[in-house]
Length: 242
Image (cartoon, rainbow, N blue to C red; front, side):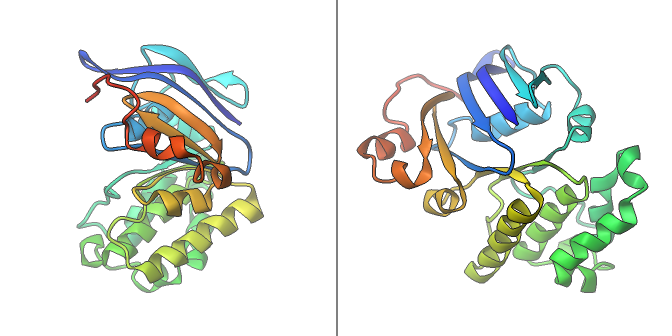
């Protein structure tokens, strides 16, 4: 479904990604791990078109999406749940959710999409008229994920989706995401500080260190690999990346 080859991204005059390779199959869940500053969020942003590529390529269903605008990539079925959720705090839950269906092709189905999200997260139906700033951290995360689902994505990019949640809410959202993958063939790329949690949700795992892919493999096998801790902590490369 998604194939990234030798991806290079610069933030101004600073090289953020030196060489990233990554692949996701249809219906597959993949974890993307690394220490702070390894380039995880930049990788997700590059897939969405937020950050332009300096080199390399990103292909979706075999077709290059390098250089395409964010709205074009969203229309192809890619949606991002950003780190920090980035909700509009004064807007209602319903209004925040509806922002996920901003493309013309999705507006026609906005009502049905909203009902699907409310079925997934019943608490959001009850709080639909409340401003987002009144919600708990876990509830805000539900809105952020629901907003992404409003775009009816085939590939969901999740950047630290569980920050600020109680263990109970974490388990609830994990169940929702796993069910979406199994029932609808939703593919996911997950960035999470808790590497055991991320790997437990993922078929395969990639590890970034200083802007490079340094390790990849089946999640169940990688945790027992002595090289994993070294790679995850970013100790195997002395390059510097912002």
